[in-house]
Image (cartoon, rainbow, N blue to C red; front, side):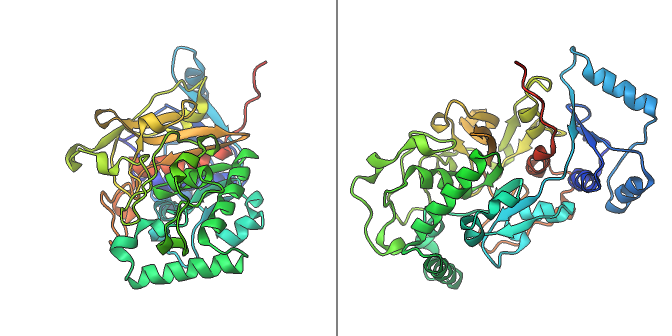
Length: 394
């Protein structure tokens, strides 16, 4: 999985997932040649790699043992993590969305990793318990329809999505979309606290935390929910309820395409040509989780924009790991934390290979980006739940 010899990093994850689905174990060689995968030497696997265009090398048992012994040495920052079982994947996404509407569904489809889609109705019926890993599509959990009001309130797609959301909320027994979304967010919170793995990108990151922090508080203006917001609602925000963020200030203006001060989009002063973020390095033997999540063939990844492009460092809780950052702009791009028995990862931006993705822009063709470092970070999270859990030292 290094930069020089792997021709399709993204589909390599798909082959690894395919191997796990056949009840074969895989060793993820953290920090070894870009985070390579050691899979059984079987003709069916070699053929699958050839079909998918994935580069591989055949090793003798002796060669494999030598590599594992080198990795085990205390003097090298490497580790071999056993992947045991293919996780069952759910994508929380509105009905009718196409796979190319979202970077995660796009890369899962490209890598040929199977997933199922769910939405509010399934979440409220506790069907999250059927899944090991959950991705949140670019959702607005605050009930403000993505804050698209100023630019798109007369657009046919906006009117239709608003109507569909209101009809679904009513069907589920709610008077407001914001009330339905809050209960969905609470169900997702409980899923993670109970041991689930949750991954979110773009506006699903900060709007999720904002919804949790505003439980019992009306932060929506009349054009969103039909009545006024609570007076002084900023002072009623409870940061103890959030996963990752603290001390943020909500954006009160309904005409402003922004949720809060968490997002760095409007504060950025970085030209596209120099917009990169760097991945942190962790101890593979002592911190295997963040090490898994940052496996890549480069430590420098191209930046990309979104409604929520990146996160204000000062408004990230101290117990949350910043795994990717742009130091020159003082922003976090890729963060990870623990909630109860589960884990969450937030990744800023919309599409790692579409710098300023806008409504109506053409889909990204991943055949043109088979070695994308930005997309690799998503797939690290997909494989993360497959890792064998080590017993805690006492």
